[in-house]
Image (tube, rainbow, N blue to C red):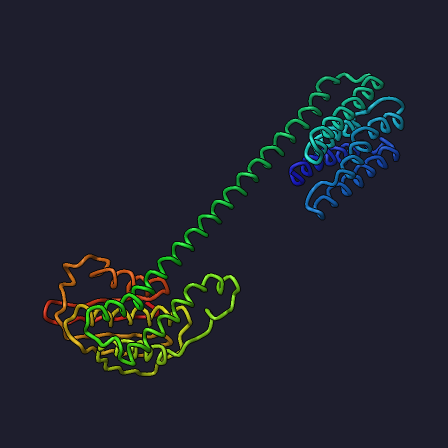
Length: 369
């Protein structure tokens, strides 16, 4: 509204400057009054732009000086008539009314416009001009259009604020859903895998390695409960880098605790960003879980190689395998789909599964993709 009414005021001031340039005999007094109008306009809009909105006091000063007193001052210095070079003084009433409609409340704006109209009626009656009705309609329509424009922009701003709030709520819900899915994947890869193995009777639940893994996963469950509070506190650990070799050694140790023999080889492994290390280790854990649960073998090979700041982790077994082409596009099951491919995709990586009946299975994890 500052811009719109400011341009409207500038058009009226330009008309006044042009009129005085073409009629230099209008007199120094009229030129001085135009200078007063310029100063008042600069004060109104300069302060408005500085503070980001109209100031009521500045608007009322503009209404009184520019909208009401200026036409009578031009009449007085011109001998009781509004000459053509001085008609800009009446034009300024329209932009003064527009500024009042945009910068004041509805009741005050109505009073200001009524005051401008009364002053201009008195000026035109005194000057006996030939166009009183058209000019008054111009002043009134300027105020009405400015008020309608202000209402429209205010309404659009309200709708925009509501839409932004809805988007924030929707984003928060998506974040909560993503957190729930992350918890689901984590529980599937760790606690559920451990409980399933113990329940199957393939390992001794009293073995020290199994008890150690159960203790680690109990601690993990406690951390999981506190994760939302830690995220709100912003402890800054997500951005820390993690040694890839140490993280994968924990994966191998956890698999061996549940009775799987893992041959591991590492070559020039780089440190990884925290979220990437978490995704890679979780995906590798699930790949080893699948070997133990589905492959029909108790041995697997894990190879990790650094490549240009990234990493490639390969898990291979010589078990029963499955028909990878006949499996769904998303993967052979919940583990492959949610815990392997989805985890790698979420951090900008990729996972490939190569398998055939009787030929074993090869899972390759790459970051970046």
